[in-house]
Image (cartoon, rainbow over all chains, first blue to last red; front, side):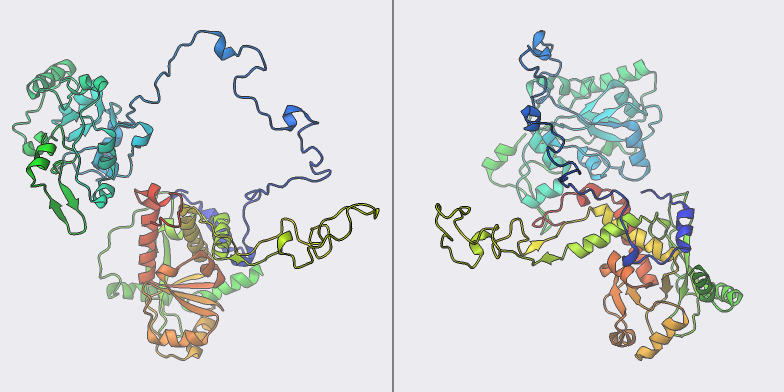
Length: 293
Length: 282
């Protein structure tokens, strides 16, 4: 149901009797009665012939060819989808959508943007149970992207990085383990549990290369190399790299999370008490040592 | 029938229409509703803004003071009769518990003796007279008591049920807006005369934004069985259709609009549309 209403429909109602409980009815065929027909109304065998496997709901499994070697077993396999159920997925978010969220005040760009902010808009959501490991910022709408942002994503392509940096923004790709993702996408639910914020785990073996590469703006990469790669990318795409040092929002643009940190401004080991609106920090040296990054 | 309707509509217009128009322009200058600067109404460009006269209850004769803008997504939405019907059926059913009951074989109050010997009588073999085959015996697949018919209508069907019903009521001239529910006397005859002269009703539902209603109208309507008062939080499809005329105060209109527009456009709609759980209510 959209905001579009045909005025003739409403005007028609002006000349019809008053709508009341007694003259209401549903659409034709909206309620389907699942009745077993009797006699000539589909009775006797109920459309299932006389005896045999088809009368007894003996459904063959898919691909089974009643004794022949099934087609799917005749040839050597090419496992395109091998391990698909354990592969990490990154549901995409386009730069167009991000720009639209910013234009419609769904996102405040005076603060760093992370997955938590994106999920809070209500327009983007991930489900870690479905092997979603965060957001993939895709380059659709890169030419029209105009915002200066400090964004932390989980996957980004080269044109996306270029589009953000051309506007004087900063992009970081960073990894979150499943537990941290659940906390990040719904912080309120986690804080209500009254547990200490855990440490973020380091990436698995097959992801560590991606997240320590300066070309991908990985969060484990050397900052010196990242600033070199920023210059290289500007040369490659032919734009003048804005100087972050001279920017009035310098502090916002350079703020980054620690490798073990899940939220901006909140360290691992802290407990956020929503009821009393206080933050409890560990004082025990053993705990401090445990949560140290 | 149609002629009657038309005649009613013509009579329902204020007696001196031009005078009323003049009145409204005068009222705009010192009306209490125009004192508060409100943000402009945002709505889809394809739909026309709906409007209604803001009338009064303190005189029997109608004295419309100003015009109120009604949001087309709430008061001019697509009239989905099927959704209204589903809402009414749901409202009837969710509180309904069927107490119809029949007995199973073990519950039938009858002798458990074998009626006749197994063999030698030339009759069919039977072990008990409680069987469904016998007269007075049990019933197969009969109703069993306390069967609840509770179910939850999908969230947005409930929202669209409200917008559709409000839109239908407005377009059929069964929705009226008044500035407040203050009447000068607690005599039920006053409100009867008022409803008669304005061709409302006969059954009327008055809706205000709070549940502490003015004293006079509460006492007056206490005597009249077919008129009722309701706060905005009690607004529902069944009651709107049960009463022929719906009278909203300006405050109620504002609140209904605000609440329904929020529900129509809330960003966390997926939270509202989750599966309904009795022990996990939002």
